[in-house]
Image (cartoon, rainbow, N blue to C red; front, side, top):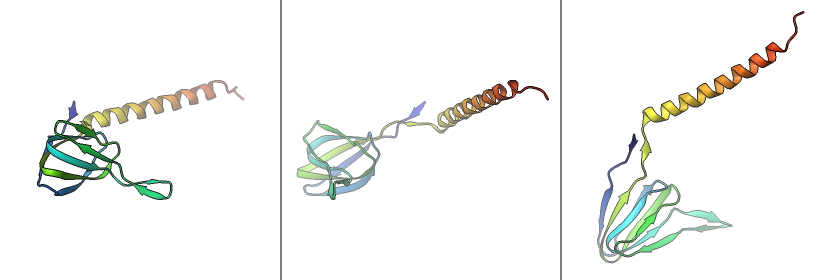
Length: 122
């Protein structure tokens, strides 16, 4: 079963900004007011570049990369809903890792059997 963190509700006054770390796949949804979402800084050539998206009420933006983003209320008070992507639970991650490990071990033992079967006795 996947674990989905509870969404966070942010309320900003006019001109107020919030700087926070967000995971890739997070959704920012403007519930009221106009928001400016500025993405994490990235290098483009020899210059630093930051994506920016303006959100009107009811619009959403999906964060492309992990990193620090800035949400700014442009005109009047604004509210935003931040929904994190679902995470796989620890038991599921351990089960997948165990299956991968057993698959590798099986491949190694089959390869070793093939090598020793072809050897002729002395």
